[in-house]
Length: 285
Image (tube, rainbow, N blue to C red; front, top):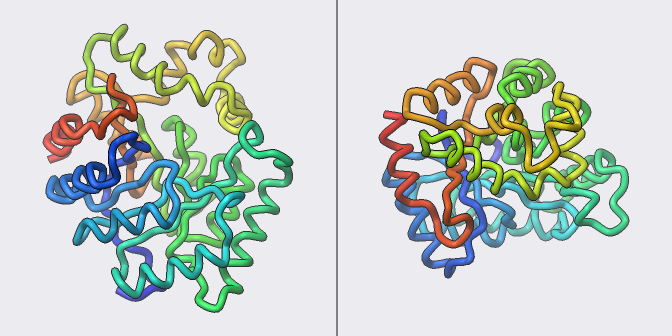
């Protein structure tokens, strides 16, 4: 595989949330994902430096940053590190990029222009990052069009089936569409929704996500008090195996090439949810 070909990531990947565990513990967990048959792992809130350690600790699985923010990591350094990583481990890395949120970035403005400029810098680097080896965390139509025109595709996070279909319509045929889907392996509605709300809570206050949900047909009331049952049920898959499989298949029917599965467990980021990953691997067989 050469550096101008998008890595083969299959139909299912796993979102590995940032862990408070030692990096070696996390790398060991990612190695098990490889053994379970997953072809890609999306390393949450990571940089290319962190992803490189996961690539080095495994032998086949593709590692993607999910997502490296453009404000805190220089484009030239990204391109240099990409070239080093590609030389050492060809075809094993996918650069996921995002514009973060105004709540986190001082002086945040013109995110579309900032992303476009960052892509220009990647293209102008002595060793450019090929468009086929980068994806964008795109939600709205404008950023989705940028993902279509200047990258391999889009990695939308916390979206509904209908929003997956809308993203596919903007992207058209060809570009990669790899939406994230939260999975709660609980059948009790109250317990499942409580876990989902715990994961959703930090995002309810972020303008980019709130605007996307409102644009997708939700009301302000759906975003209040931890999120309505409707919002939770549209953004997360929970229940028995058949119900969870049905939601994953709905994402695929809506146009997803690759579904990024994020296990939502009571442990949160305290440790990798390896037991849940094993259950998901069985569920998908």
